[in-house]
Length: 138
Image (tube, rainbow, N blue to C red; front, top):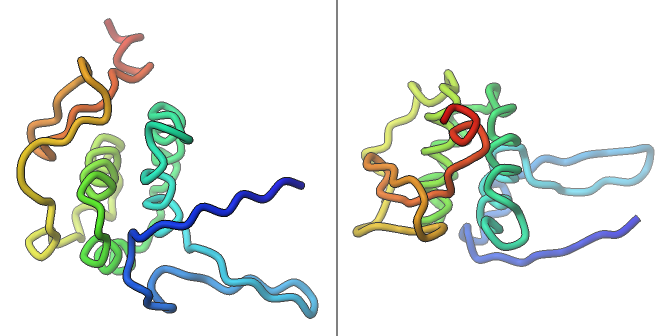
């Protein structure tokens, strides 16, 4: 099995922020909880992870814990990650979105661009690729 380690500076060094412990017999490992893992994945868009792939993964995250998402959004240091996360979650209509308070979340200033010539999301001020769903609708 190939294991890839990618270090980021997305979150402050808070050991309890968005982690879970997984135990198997006498072995235990700390892993990112789904909320944190989603944000870590979006950090790798568009390089290592493709936009469409990330969008599909985000589609399946309808049961995220809003209180964990809230804390992670407030702690996250990447404007791109926060904007992508929120734009994708809103696009999929995840129920936990309505429980978030975005007023303390720093979404930065100005526009961000994942790719040139894409679709501009006015609410989150980010240009994203035209994904396969949009292309099929055309």
